[in-house]
Structure formats: structure tokens, C-alpha cells
Image 1: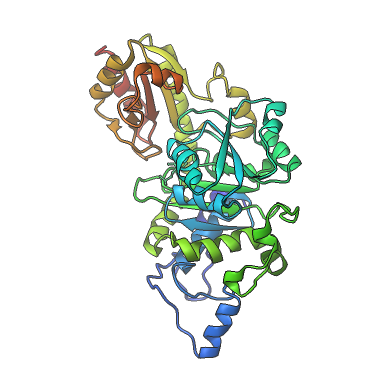
Image 2: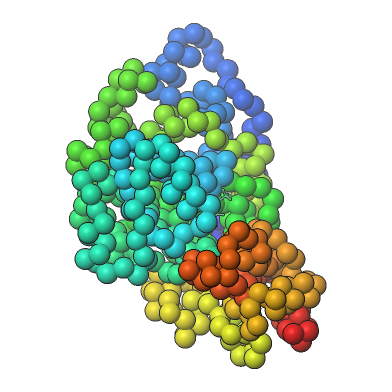
Length: 420
Ligand SMILES: *Cc1c(COP(=O)(O)O)cnc(C)c1O
């Protein structure tokens, strides 16, 4: 089925007299007829439900829907996008290991990789997303366990050459993990280009309404874990009576290990009610992404011509550095634009404060237009010089185009630019 149909129907198929809409199963626990039945569940926890820290029917319906949209074999939801990125790596890396990540990733992920994982003994080797093949090969060490990158990076708006990164990761027998939050499966399906694991912050376009924080890990089921690099998957799990994930679960080994081991121990599973709301967002995802792309394209073209704007980054613009890669990998360039206002920080702030429709928010990918000035917010501690070194111009504005009528968004931008 096509995406519009999967958004509505995948993951839940009610039988005779069952509810039309995915029910909210608001229960921590599930009952069994006998002690023996309970015992059997512990022998193989994938056979039925144990406890809502591992799995819950409402969340599972959403997991199945997202897996179908990504073309994956299975998925596991998490209570945030951060938790999804963390577990996607902890499932295959432990103290003493390293992994490679592009430098153009979400700021929160940079902290997680460069600071917190380092404290756990896991080293992140950063590479530029535009690095050549030789430079990428040279970044690998014997202990490297994964490669990580973002399809369409937040906030750099770089587009990753997924096929190239997959080819290089696979040459070193490690998986490619892609954070595809800004693209969503509607604009790009990284698995089709060789990605092995896809993660999302569902807090953004998937939820779409700025209702709740969440994340998801999708497993392609295609990676060969038996190179000897991944003992956690190929050797018995002592915490699960010697269970051998590959032998027992085959292609589902990675995602079931994440659930049975990491979710059991870290407990960052979303609540049923959150999954219910996420499902409502997913039902209209295909429709909304189309309009986000249209509105943002119109706004980007307008900004490109505005004399008060120094430069615009939006991979849907033919002059953009990433236009070619966007044409190859993305069905549309999504809804976020960054631009530099003439006159630096002072004018960027003046412009933003003059906006009336677009709201000042830390969030992106809201259904409503919202805007952020990184130099005053996420990168506040940096001097102008440090900002430039980090690739953030002091006059840079991150503009997340919403689903209002685009004429109203343009009118708001125009009157704010007129104040400069
Ligand atoms: C927001 C975001 C995250 C983190 O997700 P949360 O749901 O806020 O924890 C990770 N990656 C990208 C690309 C994001 O935009």
C-alpha cells in the first residue's frame, strides 16, 4: 500500500465488532489463567504481553505503523527522540567501543554523543557529512561499531548521501543508523538506500501538533550481525537465562534485544495515551508533509528575493548546496528554513520580535509556524566569534513553516522585514 493508506491503516486491523479506532489500553499489566502461563511468558517474552514497561497494545499498533511506513521489519517506541538515539547505539556499543557520527546532527545528540556517552566509555568520532570516501574510511578503528547521521540535519539542513555512508559502513561490517526526524518516512525511506536502523524524534512532524515528546527505533532486519563484531547479539544473554538473540529471533534480533534488555532495564517506554495521540498525528502525516513542503518552498523563494536577507538555506532551492542530494533522496525539502538577516544579531532579534503570527518557540516542526534565534537561545553561551566557528551566524534565524495559509505567513514575514 501507498503511504497515505499506511498512515491510516497500518498497524491495526480490527476484527468483527472490535473498535474502529486503536483503543487506549491503559493498563500496566496483563492477566494469565495460570502460574504456568506466566512462566511461559518469561521463557519467551515475545509471545504475549508481560508489563507495559516492555510493550503495550496501543504503543505496539503505532510501532507497527511506523515500521510499515519505513519499510522496516519492526519498531520500538521510546519516551523521547533522545532515548531512541541512545538505545539505538547502546544496543550494540559498550564501554571501550567507538562509533562514527556526522558533525551535522541535532545539538542534543551532540551532547549525548560527545559528553554523556564519553562518560560511559563510548567514544564518538565526528566526521563532516561532506567528507570524501577516503577520509570516512580512515575514521574507522577496530572498535568502531556503527555509523550515525541525519537525513536532513537539524538545524544545518545538510542532506546526507545515505548510499555512500551505507556502502562505507558495510565495508567495515557495521550498521548505518539514520536519524530521519526532519524527513519523516513520507519524504525519505533511508532503508531503501541501505540504512540498517532508522530513529526518529516523533515529537516533531510525526506527532505534528506539539502535543508530546516521543521517539522510535526502526529495524530494517537486513543487517548481518554475525561478523564477530557484535557479541551482544551472537553470544548468550546471561540476564535472560542464556538467550541467544540471533539464533532465537533471526532478523528480529536487534530490535528484540533492544526491547527485552534495554527497555527492560532503562524503562523509557511511552504511555498508551501518548501513543494514541501520536497515532492521530501519523494518520495525517502524508497529507501534512506535502503541505509543509509547499509552504516552505514558497517562503524560501520569497526570502531568497528579500533585500533584508543575506542568505537562505533550504535544500528545495536550486541554488542550495544540497539541492542535488535533496533531489535524489527527498520527495520534498520539509518545512524548516534557516536564513541570515542583514545586520547580524540585532536585526535578527528585531525581525523575530516583530513577527505576530509566527511564535517564538524552542520547538520545530509544529503545525503552527514557529521561529528560533539560535544565537539567543540554543547557542546563547557563545560569543559572535565562537558562533561563527560553530557554523551559526549571529543573524541566523531558524524558521519552521507551519500549515497556516502561506499568504498569511508571507504577510507576517513581510511586515516584520519592513521594520528593519
Ligand atoms: C528533536 C530532535 C531529537 C531529539 O528528540 P526529542 O524527542 O526532543 O528527545 C533528535 N533528533 C532530531 C533531528 C531532532 O530534531
